[in-house]
Length: 151
Image (tube, rainbow, N blue to C red):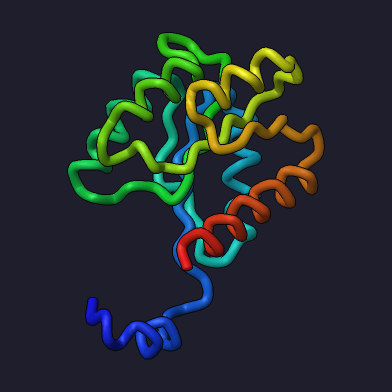
């Protein structure tokens, strides 16, 4: 990148950055709904899906090695093998993933879960909406946040 030509580069850049989502959730119905919501957003795609924290760590390691880090990670709390909190703690210790935006995306409404999520390094805690249109709005808001952050 030529530091003297920054303004010229930014004017030719697309206004919408690719938005890749890595989903960690053991509920097939939730994953299907997320896939549908993402498909309605231009330039957005699901880069990976893991059914538990252990599988997520394995897949993130492969993505990290290929330098294909996702834009954002959505993580459920209650999963087998490694739950969302433990996954969050582990990801925050991985040097190249420590800045990865992570949203805890859970059906839990417990204050303790929200507090733990932030304690372990979550960027946001969103309760899973019950209706599809609410899910679309939530995912669209996350994508807009990502594009503002990437500029």
